Image: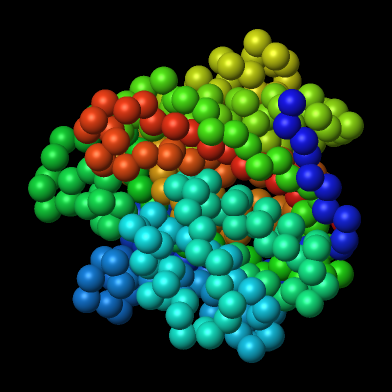
Length: 332
């Protein structure tokens, strides 16, 4: 059985910011984003530079909201989907702040938040830190499948990689929304090598984390308002509910998937829903955290879900492996 790590100190969200592109601005949450660029280029010449600029803009918006400068930051933990986290490095190097580059595929948002909260809990000198996560549709498609210009037919099980970013500022004795504990999650075999059907591959890891969390926790699932996943989409959500129902049908009744909130399935061609690590980051920043701030929610289990694969491993027939780190986030 996995162990839940308790946060002993008061680590809270100072504020958060979200950025997106054209499709995100057209979706149900479009008016909640802090900034959207309908060209998806963010003033840059390439998609790769655009993603880095989006991350930079997002963090600057969060800093402006908080009324602090980059000089007040003691650590940044951030990541994206590009090789070697190139977008994050290109976008954030000008901040000149100690930096941890993270890669957990689409689980990067939860990974960055739990890493920061753990570091801050152990080191008093880390008093204001930032977590930033981004993904870009054009860069991800080029890296993991085929460039957009190729115009390949997408399977109905495929998901639309979000052009989105989320930035979070965490502080000691700050904010009304707190990170209370976390479960890192285990690598779980997704039982498929189909890169066009990653939702179900991640669902096994999500189910493993949820079941392990509540077997280890002293808090009943009925004391949670929501279990939030990152980007399982319609196919992955259906499988997750099937897996959870064998343990406790109530778990499915309080589940929400960020991938099903970002786009309008009737007006936007997202197929099985959103994907990309910017999905859970932007939806947490623009939707769920405000609900916690406004007391519409009190306690949630937030879990970004990642598919640990690349284009080479799937072409070689290797199964997609999943990971799903989770955090308990509460309104004070």
